[in-house]
Image (cartoon, rainbow, N blue to C red; front, side, top):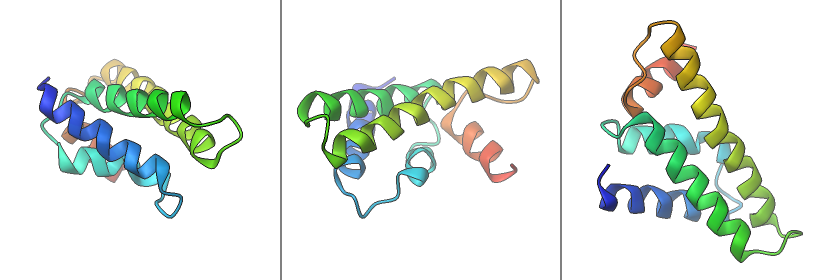
Length: 105
């Protein structure tokens, strides 16, 4: 993992969390498109880090705090998906592998 890439991924995720006009559902796909070579679990780390930072900064009744909770779920689901893909013997090493899987769902 390069620190620069991870920082850029966290920054992008945090911007989306804080902008209610941006669709959270597409955040994992956008990160995977921008960094397909990244290890797949790095997506989960970036999402979790951005969500944690947002929830540390914003009040629990704020929109950004609640949006961050959705991003936490995305991070968790990536871990679950990676485990499932691994059990099936499918590629699950990179963000690009996840992106290919999502395109075929």
